[in-house]
Length: 320
Image 1 (tube, rainbow, N blue to C red):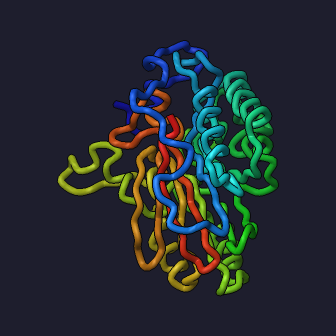
Image 2 (image 1 turned 45 degrees about the vertical axis):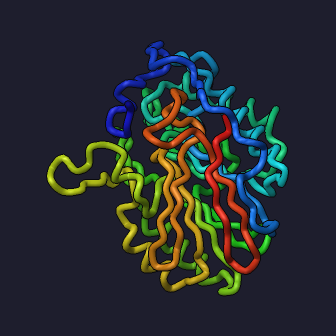
């Protein structure tokens, strides 16, 4: 089974033609086209799709584009359709270690799927694998996050907006290492943190806030994503969960209208409540990188029903 420590070592560059396994296939039947339970009609519904890891079908012997299309169509054909799709990052398989031609092919596969199958407003977050640090990137204007910003049509890697009665904050978790490294840490630089402080201060206290980041701010799942207890102590890498989580929870405590933080990255599904804020790590559309379940988490996405009073209902949905 892959985990974050050995995944990229096995993937390599797409042009290498390495084979990871058979095409993505789940033996369990798809769910009905609506949620298992819906206690009341939502005021605003979102679908949170994260970690698609799209590439051209047939690459690495999986059909990633077709799987993403299946998830996208499933989300948009619920009986109560989402008002908005939040795309949580890692839209493409990998740009960190990949040559320019293969990165281009990945982005083209992602954009082709959206062009033909997206019928809902969408907002994007940048994932670590969306950042190009591969061969030849160092002196290229598309290096780092520039290519992802172009594909997502974003001016800045973090931003906010209002929709329904809620305020949405989209953050950039990936603090890249030097230009010569593919490494990253989950934390905000000072400029982003100051921006977030100001954004929350200027948001009316009566307006509930939903935060989306690619990497979890706070989560249970990172503890299970690898043998993190072998030293006799729990050790969670700073690339798997925000190393500045303490600073962020203190900031959120000053703004009780922050209700919900959504993330992906780990490919596992969890939900944790801390100091009145719910942190939900919402699995992965690709599951185990298009090879079935990742541990106990099936490939899927989250449907979140938001209510004007600041309450919400979240359900993780299997789409295949």
